[in-house]
Length: 157
Image (cartoon, rainbow, N blue to C red):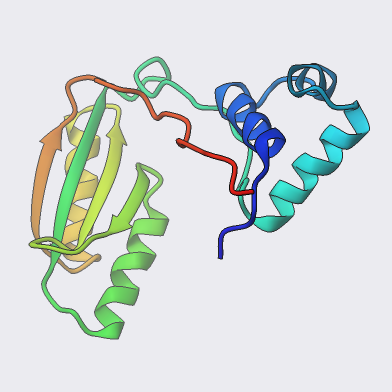
C-alpha cells in the first residue's frame, strides 16, 4: 500500500532521485527543514519502502561492457520447477543486470551487458541450456533516448 506523501516528502524524494550523494545538510537546506528533521524523514521513507536503496548509477560502456542488449525470453516449460530453475540461473549470471517477468508473447525481459560477443554468446547459451529458455530474442541497445527519470510524484495530502 502506498504511503501518504506531503509536499516536503515529494521535494525530498525528487532531490534524492536527482542526486542521492548529497550531504544531509544540503538536502535539509533545499527542502527547508533542519538536518535532524530531514534525516528523520529520509529514514521514514526508507523504512516504509518508498526508498528501496541508494546506489551509484554506473556507465556500463565506460566500465568496459561495450555490449548492452535486451533479451526477450520464452520458456520451454511453465511449471514451478522450470520457473525456479530459470530464476536461479538469472540470479547466477552477473551479466544479467535487470530482469522482469512480463505478460504477453514472452515470459521475461532481461538487460544483459557483456565485454564482447563471445561473453554474450556464453550468457545466451546458459540461458538456453541451464535456464530452460526455448526462445531468445536479442535486441542490441544502440543508445539512450531518455535516461531513467524521477517518478512523477505528487503530494497525497
